[in-house]
Length: 404
Image (cartoon, rainbow, N blue to C red; front, side):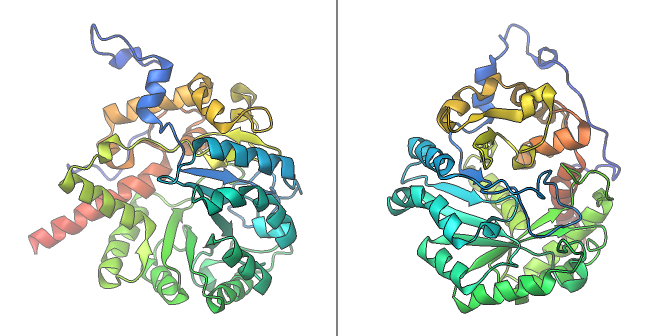
């Protein structure tokens, strides 16, 4: 099991150069070699922002441009489709995730036009559509659209009504009841759905109430996003390690008594443990570059939360624009991007210094930037509460059962 560790996590480590850890007489890896060692050559997912606008105004939202209408044009959608044809295969179809802002705010006719260029890819088994929605706009027509285009649906909802106080419309009115009505329509049409819940300092002490709600809601999976400081959400209080470890400890206990609901993070932990027993290569897992395409075709890599964020130092994190370059060409040159290269240095530092690296594979790029101000740092609060606390909770559970 894990070594005992202090409950007070260490501060981030900054590693300005890779040479410090280079073994004597071993030539340092080139930037391309470092990239290939850590990052998957082919993305599993492409995130598409059909419009940055959102019809609700969640207080913890990270999106910088959610108040502006910036609808995607058909030529951008066609360019994305051409890019995906270059990299998708029947054995490894692409997950195309319509996300960021509220995709349903475009209306069914407009989103139908944007998904038309992908129809041949879908029929050939090269692509799966996903949509992440706040659920408030789900109608019977949207349900028909989801069925026609085989769209897999994720709904953002934070648990029972008292956990959803941060999810309000632009007049400050709660959207909880409207989200429930949308979910009821999905269920009437027989459309399965997953959920994502943001856990705040107000809800992290009640994991059983949270999970009981989702078990009754009818979703097949719930993803737990412990609130993060990122993007436009820079000043709200967020949960810390101790509270997160207790949350995960009780959540693990809940899942053992309630096997019908999949909790995404605990399921991922189970996959990791099975890989250790089976020796099937978790250690060789490489990071998905997750190309994220804005409504005007600009692409950022590694973290969708970087899309739309202005940073002259990193050229706004842009890898290119799909109207000029294919995603495959952008990925071939991704190692030249300053923020990608710094992120690789941070991953090397994580592997050298963190006992949790085998499981988490390194803190997320966006969290490094938003929390630590740079990419070549190591720990973030996000990795402490979502990875370290989870593994610590499992260790505590096993230790308690062994002692009893």
